[in-house]
Amino acid sequence: MSRERLNVQAPVHELIAARWSPRAFDARPVETEKLASCLEAARWAPSCYNDQPWRFLVADRHQEGEAWQRLFDCLSPGNQTWARRAPVLILACAATRFGHNGQPNRWAQYDTGQAMMSLVLQAIALGLAAHQMGGFDAGRVRQAFAIPDEYDLMSVAALGYPGDPAVLDEETRQRELASHQRKPLEEIAFAGRRGLGFMVPDSLGWKAKVGQSACPGTIRISIRTWLKPWSGLGSRAGGCSTWAPAPAPRRCPWPGGAFRWWPPMSLRPRWIGPGGWRSGKGWR
Image (cartoon, rainbow, N blue to C red):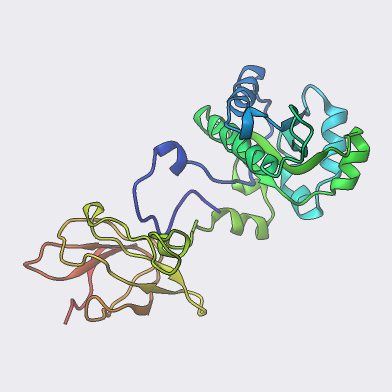
């Protein structure tokens, strides 16, 4: 996936907006100071009872080449095709029991995920990139590094400077250049009870929610606050030369571009394509 996002519904911090999971890495080393800052960010993540259940095995191919190779060899073949250029691999583990009483810690994996997100965001802030992977042979990793059974092996993250997608094979490069998409907020957040989807406040302006249809190259457009002029930019998913009566959803092919709601005196949606501004037939 690329950093382009199709269906952003509300503003987020630029650090979060810049985060994505690239597969193209530059082979140059990561400075020890930057690597230490990433691990320090993880160290200060929140955790249940402040138990800090996370443990990290860091394999820097420029410092610990043999350890890097052992960890790399445990990755799935699909991940090996692109991760071979990543200068750093980080194994994240979670202690299964609390340190203060020895009882099972069912929040350990959750907390380790929080620590990894802190690490990733710090990496982005330092100009690095990170790609977390679940595709690895946990049993083989445990044996290769003699990791005790009281730790769950959660993920392996590739860390390094962003690279040129041209170094990737064709299939992986296409995945690299594809766009981000997420489920709409109404499907993942609920206002007080399940079934009542959380709605983006009108103060955020006109929003378009783009959903993939079964037909490639086709999108679904629905409008929330369609009478608000100059209130937002849609998603670069494609374009439509015909428009549905507002605010009903419409499926339409869209070869590329963005769309914007113009002042109410025109009552016409516009979209940007490769040739510049173009207009649809307007709301009827």
